[in-house]
View 1: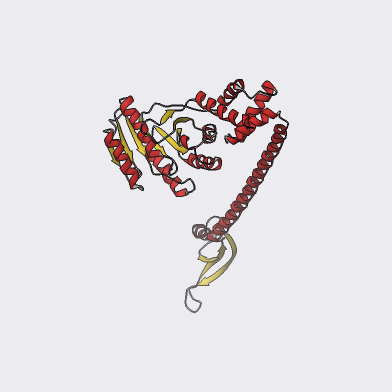
View 2: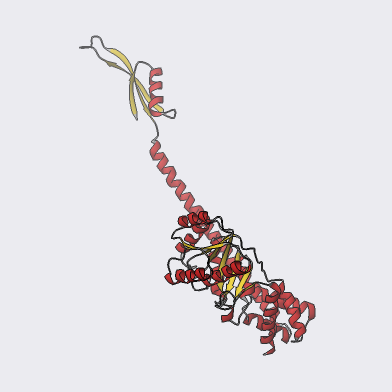
Length: 367
């Protein structure tokens, strides 16, 4: 609220508009006398009282109202998400119950095939589809070589492989202990000895001195230049200096999928380096739940292909199907031992399908 002593209403309006804004309201006006001496020479003026709303308070109140509305919307969205999640879970459980009921009605030999697929830890949905295809195609089956060939054909539809040309910058990442450094050395030997490529190695695995020393040993034996970088920025500078090479293989430190900071660091590394190829290296000797967790969490980075290692340390080969299915990227290479460079092969869909069908049938025949 503010009072004005003015000559006329026009002057009052101008001052009110200037001080209080166009939304101000005049509460009262009255005539007053000012000046002079003993009533002589006084002059008559106009006293105007005006008021306006407190804009800062209004803004604060509006802000609080907006925050409250935003909170209510978020809570509603959260409840909706929870309800949708619960519905999806219910539908999945119903689907599994119906699927189990249908599978329990299978002929005995098909139930044995299902048991074999489950023993090989083939994804449950995939296993159910394969058995259903066999039931539709043959009704019941005989557990012989003809079934192995048919089973391989059905498995082939779920195998996803692709062997890319190793060119430009090729990055290797994955959890700790899966054999990234050894796998890199195997591919380096292949590029150097077989394909006669000009290549270099860059390592960012500075956490483990043994890993760096191991890679230096391989690089020295194969006469391949190797550099070390401690940050993504240094790595980018080193790569700029290596542009003359056909291929630069980049080793990284192992990261835990449960460590959010390490996952963020890996994503930042991808953003800086922007590799031409990026291999996610995963061990085949892990449980299905662990494999699923790794593949889902590492999706934050933009991997292009999978390398599955330690095949020689397991008799369960379902991950050859599960990994690309969960990760959404194909398998490029498979390692089956520690020897450099021998123990690595290109992923071949037909070979994988035949390997799995043989193991599944072996389990089915054993009862």
